[in-house]
Every structure is written in C-alpha cells, then in structure tokens.
Length: 244
Length: 244
Image (tube, rainbow over all chains, first blue to last red; front, side, top):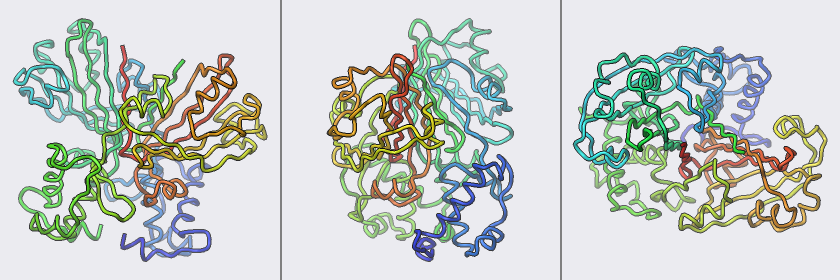
C-alpha cells in the first residue's frame, strides 16, 4: 500500500502495469521460456527507465496472475504451464503429470493414526473417535513443490494401510492390495490463501494465493474410504471439464 | 513486506495469526454473522492488546482466505457463504443463485459487435474477422458484485441477438427465441489476480485474488455459439463436482 502510493503514473495508467505488459508479452512470445530466470529488479528497472519500486510492483502483479514465481531467494522465474486437472476423470496425480509430459514426485512427510474429530466425522460420515490413518504428503512437478496434502483413510476399511510405502499412487495400492475400486467422489475446490504449516512446507510466504481442493471417496457400498485435502500453489493447476 | 518486518512474534508464532484465529473462531461460531461489520482496526488492536499494524495483518490474512471482505471504504464485513457451482450441471447463474436462497442481479455494461481476433478465433473455431457480439455484464449476489464477464456470441448463429434485453438469463433467451439447446461445453477455471478494468468494475484494488472461468458452448451440430469469460472475486465461489 505504501509502495503503491509512491508509484508513478502516466496518461496510460500506472507505469508498473506497462512494465508488467512488456514482461507478459515476452513470456507469451517465448522470448522468456518456462522456468527461465528473469533479469534482476535492478536490471528490469534500468531497462524500463523506471524505479526499483515500480519494477517490484510489476513483478508482484505477474506473480499474482501466476505468470512468474519466486524460488528460495534465487530470484524470479517464468511459471511453467498449469497442470490440467479434470475432476470428472479417474486418474492418479502421477499418471496425470506423466501424461502431460512432466515428471511427478511424492514425498511422505508423516503417517499417524488418529481418532476422527467433529470436523472429520462431518466430512466422512464416520463417528467421532473412529480410527483414521492420516497421511501428510508433498508432491512435485518437474522438481517444484506444487501441493501438500492431508489424506485421511478409513483404518477399518483398509487394515494395515499404514505399513505401506506411500511415495506412490495410493489408488493403485488400494486396487492391488485391497481389491478396492472407488465408486463415488465428491470434490470441492475454491481459491484461498496458504497459511503455515502449508505455506512453509511449500517454501512460500504465508498469505500466498492457493487453491484448496477436497475429495471424499467411497466404495461401491457407499462406505467411506478416503478424504483428501490438498493445498495447491495458485499458479500450478487449471481445472478443465468437458460437458456433453 | 515492510509491515511484516515490524510485526512482533511470540513463542506461538506471529501475533497476527493469533488475532486471525480469534476472529475466524468468532465467524465459525456465529458470533459474527455473514455481512455483519467487523470492529474497526483501532478497536481490534485495543481488544487484542496489540498494535494496529498487527490488526491490519490479521485482517489482510482473513481477506486472503475469503473469510472477510472490504466494502467501498465502509469497513470490513464477514463474507457470506460461497455460491456452490457444479460445472457438470446445466443451470443458469440466476437459477443457481435463487436455488441457494439468494438474490441475483445482472447489469449489462456494454454490447458491441466486433470481429474475431486471433485469440477469439483460437478459442471459438471461428475465422479471424467473423462477426461476434460482445456482451459485457456485471452480476451480483445479494447486492454484492461478484463477477464481471465478457460473453462472445456467434452473430451468424444468433441473428439479431444484440437487440434483446440482456439483464436476464442468456440461455433462456437462446432456448425461447432461437430454439437452441447448448449440447457441449468446455469449461476451464483457475485462480488468478484481478487487474483493471475488471478490478475497477468490481470495486476492488488491482491485484485482488480472483477466479478466472471460461466456458465455450456449442450446439448439437458442434457449431460454436458462445464463449463466456468470467472474472469472479476469489471468495464468492465454490466449485463442487460429484462423480459416480
């Protein structure tokens, strides 16, 4: 806000938006390739004959739009294409990433057995106190962390699930070891801000824009199997649905 | 950033997040009702024994999460529930808002006949230069502006469409006057930042978080009918899909 007040404007509106337009054009024309590093604030300011305050506003705007991202104080980089996600299709994160020519990775951060609290009971239909295996994972695309997730599994429906290796597709594990096909999924998605601990796990500032996705899955008998709560970086996902 | 550096922290993390938690609890417990006004920054700071800088950080965090919104310098208000939108179902904005017990309104801001440019040709399958009627509308829920949209209509498929009243459901107009049922829709949604002119039309600062939604609709023969580009405020919509 304070910076905004210092920002100059011209007859064509605020100067930072003109700097933004120039950089956005360079990205769209391929002069700046995905994952390539942008010039420093100082260089951007000089080459646009403006101040570093203005250059920083232009970069913040491009970040908010999902066109560039900041990486661990190493500078600003051009965002790669968003991963296309169709909630009506039945594929795993890993298969979807590979199908789009990119490289997935999954890290299991924590596995704990807990009891369902009131919130989880309402989300899953279990009773408060029922046993749940909570899995905390971070997932990457091409080496960039794009989401952290909490997966809540029905421990009675999936006995011994906590002993498996979770750095792989959970759906394949369910199919192969429990003969389980997920029959019904309720999915909810909305924009939100990432706070800690999710922001910290993704290496971004608290308050960074994100997309919150939940998915509640049941088996053929309607029995609750899995509730997945995902926190995505705002610039990594595009939701696409084709309705006929 | 500068404010963040001045912010105090305690053993339990930054103080602004504790203030945020208290206000969020009051909202969840119904002590603060939807659309009710929050106490001023000064009052919040005093009642939480902290500074106005800290109170402001807590409010900004709650805004980013979609729990509160700012209205025309009249102060901060509790966000009403998000409108549920199921992209796989076929209903109009107005019908959907009414079905959720709320009051829709639509304002037509502009109607112009244009020629398809390269971007529109790629989105619609029309040839560059083909005639398109562009409709610019703002839509409200319970008196709050929640989205602005650009609708691009195939002028050859809908002759005379520019002469109708657009402050109503376009889909009903197509059905009743053109005998047209939309047979196929391709929908894309992703988080973004609102810039001018959309931000201005919604009465928010440029850079406010938003959700970008496009919908391309065709008739039974696959002929392009309508391309709708919507800019939603980030805290007004929840996308829900039920997959069986």
